[in-house]
Structures are given as C-alpha cells and as structure tokens.
Image (cartoon, rainbow, N blue to C red; front, side):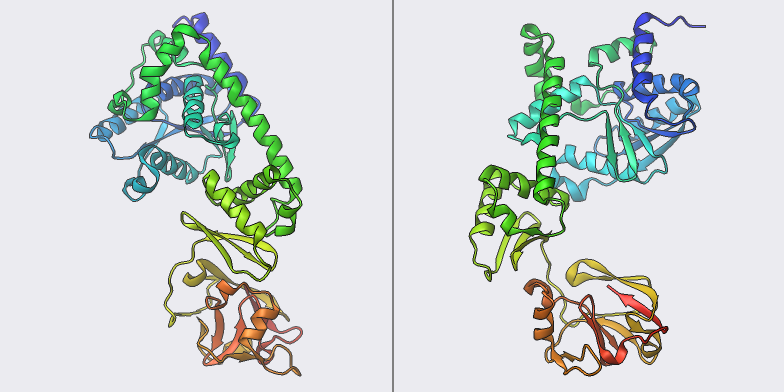
Amino acid sequence: MSHKSPHSNQLDDRIAAQLAPLLPAGSKLLLGLSGGMDSVVLLHALHRLAPKLGYTLSAMHVHHGISPNADAWARFCTELCERYAIQLEIKHVDIAPLKDAHGIEASARKLRHAAFAESVCRYVALAHHADDQAETLMLQLLRGAGLRGVSAMPLVREQGSQLLLRPLLACGRTTLLAYAQQHALQWIEDESNADELYPRNFLRHRLFPVLEERFPAWRDTLGRSAQHFAEAAGMLEEVALADGAGEPLLAVAKLDALSPARGRNLLRHFLHLQGAPMPQEAQLDDMLRQLRSARDNADICVNFGEWQVRRYRGHIHVMRALTAFDPALRVDWQGEAALYWPPLQREVHFTAAVGSGVSRDRLSQGQVSLRLRNGGETLRPQPLAARRSMKNLLQEHGVPPWQRERLPLLYCGDELACVVGVAVAAEFRAAEGEQSVMVA
C-alpha cells in the first residue's frame, strides 16, 4: 500500500470538502479531461475519492483538432482512463466556423461547453485552479472589462441543466505540480502553452514571474479581488432586476427615471438576460442616448454585432439582426408540433386544443401552409364584425413595424385562416367543444 504524504492528503481533503455538499450519493460526475497536468491531477484525485463520496466518475476529452498532436492527446487520455477503468468519451469538434469571429481560445471554450452539455451527467468537474483565476482576472482588466468580466470563476456555476464544479480553485499550479510528482503522474504538454503570442501565455511567462519576486502572494490577492468584484456584480444585478431588467420588454420610462449610471446598469443587464452579447461601453452609451431621446413614434434601430436594439411604443426590444427572406416563401403544415419560420428566425408552434384557436375540421378541407403577406389581405376577426385590412389589424394589436412583413399567415388552401399570434378568421374559429389547434 502506498503511503499518502500530508501534502497528498491535504489536496484530497480540499477537493472532498468542496464536493461533498454538492454531490448527492449516487451522482454521475463527468470530468473535462484535456490530458494536461491540471486535469490529470484532478482525474487521479477524483478516482481516489469516488468510493468515499459515492459518485460514479466518467471523463470527456474534446478533440479540437487544432494541434498536430491532437490525435496523440486523445490516445493518451484513452490509455489513462483505461488504466483507471474510467469510461471516456472523445468528442470531435470543428473550430473553423467560430475562430474568425471569436478567436481560437474562446471558440474552443464554447465548443467544450457545448460538448459537456450533451452529456447526461448533471455534474461536470473542471480543473481550473488559482493561477487560472488570477490570469483570467488580469486579462479581463487589461481588456477593460466591467464587473461581470472581472468577477471570479465560481466554485459552482449553473449552466442549463448542469452544474459546473471547479474543486481546484483554491489550489495553485505549484501545489498541483507537487501532487503530480508525488504520485509519478504523467501528462501531456500542449505546445501552444509556450507561444507568447497568446496573451495568457505572455502573462504566465513574462509578467507573473516578476510579480512572484515582489508579491509572492499575488495569486491569493488577485483571487480575493475577483471575489470582491463578483460580490459587487451580484449586487448590481439585484439592483437591475429591481429596476425591471427581468421583464420581456423594457419600458423606456424606467430608463428615463434613473441616473445615467443606473440606466446603463439596467440596460446592460437587460441585454444580458435577453441572451445578447455585451456592447462596447461607447456603443452602450450611444444606445442609451438614442433610446431615451427619441420621439415616441421614431423608428429607432441600433445595431451591435449580429444583434439589434429597437424601440416601439415606449418599449425596448432586443433581437438578433433580421436577415433577408424570400417573399414567396411557403411552408406546408403536415401536422407537425412546430415549423421553423425563417423570416422571424423562430418556430411556429401548433398545440392541440378544444374550443379555442383554429377549427381542425375547417383545416382538413385544404392544404394548410404558412405564407407571407402579399398585399391586400383582409380578415374578419369576429362573426358579425367588418373585414379588417391587415395594416389596421396589425397596428391595433401592437405588432412592431419590423415584424409586419415577416409575420406568418396560416392559410387553408387559398383562404386566410389565421394571422399567427394576432387573430383567427371568424370562419375558421373553433366552436365550443370542437377539436382545434392553437397556433403561436
């Protein structure tokens, strides 16, 4: 039996203390295994702790194909996991479509997280450590990032249905290296780690050794700063939510009632919650100025990257920039639960109902399809009502101008049955107790 040194016990105990409150007995834990020293150390420690903490450990290696040695790295991870009798999945990803827009490092990270998300494991362990935390903070400061950007990587982060766990965050690279040497572990060295054209490597090889001489506790102090930034960012998010950032549409009046700084905070968090990327500070200020100063009926559209911010009837809309569409587009419905509608870049959903929405009996009398406006369409929304022009109908229902030419119209044969999300034609409206379909 091998003798555990105090240093080995200390790292095991640290990891166990971090994970024990988070992993229910019988959990499935997936490790992101690159084959580098950090993830090899974590694999070794998690393998030893599995019987004590009662989880099942597996691993995933994401094959980016960037390095000429990528195949060798995958083989190394395969042999390592076979030695431990740990199930390994190798995911091949293609970085080419993303790297021009996001850069190699960010693209690789996006693809790794997308690969993890496909796993059935709820818990995903990552080998980020204290040096990674400090390096990330310094990079973000040099990029002029806001509080969210310079906030600490958390021990636990919810991403979709998964929890990302970083049990090594309190450990520095020297601690992990000592553990690896102690247990005679082998690992791979990514040749790109020596390339100082990558900003992270420049900091690691040039700046941090100098800091080490004068400020030996730099990892801990930068880590604490990141924690303070994270706390401040959390408080600003609470303020933004109280100001209305969590609503589907943001009222311009709420921005007008706030100080410039608080208005920027509200708009920033509103964009984030809508899934939009964060604009540059100058873009954000210009966006805020245009949204607040425009006339009520002004057609405001601010582009940033592949996204747009628009104003309509006193509210702010955030969306991906709309692309060109075929005005002759027609999509036939064959009973599917959803159809993709390219002009609005979203799905149209068909839900079974009784006595509300569109009559199934009427729809059975012709080919059902989604089409675009062609001009001159009218619709009677109620049995005794006059027919309404499409223009008046859409204005009455507050449909934003940029959506009006893109809205899907549901036809049965050549009869207009429904303007999706707006109104059902009286002739197609389901009677009480009748089988029907809701289209939205």
